Length: 467
Image 1 (cartoon, one colour):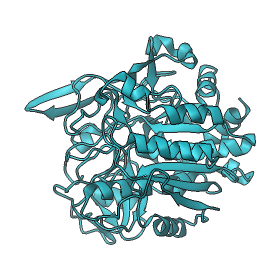
Image 2 (cartoon, rainbow, N blue to C red):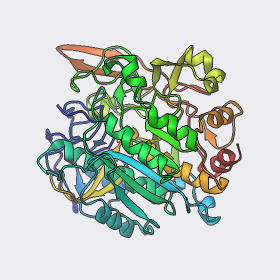
Image 3 (cartoon, rainbow, N blue to C red):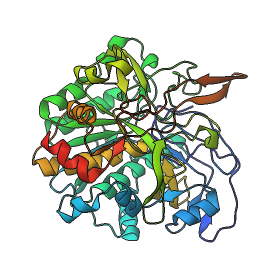
């Protein structure tokens, strides 16, 4: 089983039963594909929802035209959101009105293989939602040429899903930022596989001054590395990024407090964490569930993303304590929670499947049209857009932002919105037994489900830029 670690809501992998509700303009997605990433897992089907892959999460439904939230609720039984709804929810309009949209900054998205149709798909997405084209959109392969896209290869299809989610939604948040898609030739899975190529590619980007922020929607369980040294030896690009003032982000994971073993099939039955999210030089981005009306106003406060019951298997904001890294100095203010370990996540944004984002795809092996994607593979690119806007406001790169985020959180800055509902505990069946891995509940202040919480971006950007 190929492992993937993005969190898209396109539950790929040969689909189990898909809902067939006969909605105009909507149809079940084709049954072929899985999502990229280290969190990959087997099919986790449930009524009307396709199998889940940890990296990309989605419902098994395709819409020929962008659906409304009401259409998604009627067709698939869950909510879906468009760019304007998330822009409203995160209070981006005041920034756009001041010309703060990421202009002059570059977001690098790193994905294995990429997508053969990403430029055309972004253009369609932009046209349908009234978004401008990015000022510049480049694709590079600094670690070697990627293999030709194979629509029958679930790994290629899954990473194409991930790539599309990452690019479309980073752009939706920061439409004025340049985009740089960094494709690598080996799929990242568990353990070290695919990571040396990612390190090489990221170092190229950093050494050549090509990006201000790097978003990574993938990860590998710390316990799947041959040794701690083998993991630590792969930190070169993060050390390099810190020296060059480049901000690095990573998804916190999609299986709550657990994650996948080296086989990519079985989960650990006790709490674990994943890297690079757990790296002290990386900002770990967890997931929340938004409850929005048709224009993006909140109907209820955000809660921890946990779609485990909906999807029939672990599907929740990753978070917990690292077994490799000790508590960094910036987490001293939350030592009561993390003890002597690096804790994740640091901050959170939208990641739920029920409340997923709309993504347009047209590559082979997956029905063309709009799909509902979710997972922390969504939250990391969303936050990359926020960082790009903050870097524009500051007139310089922000580098490692974790010390600033923890200072803002500790001082109850207005731009950080506490999340105090929900938890990321997961229950699953494996090898004939049922397991529950206890996660963390959202509580006032910092916790291991959403970090400091989520954002009011109009307030957070100047706070981060000025810190």
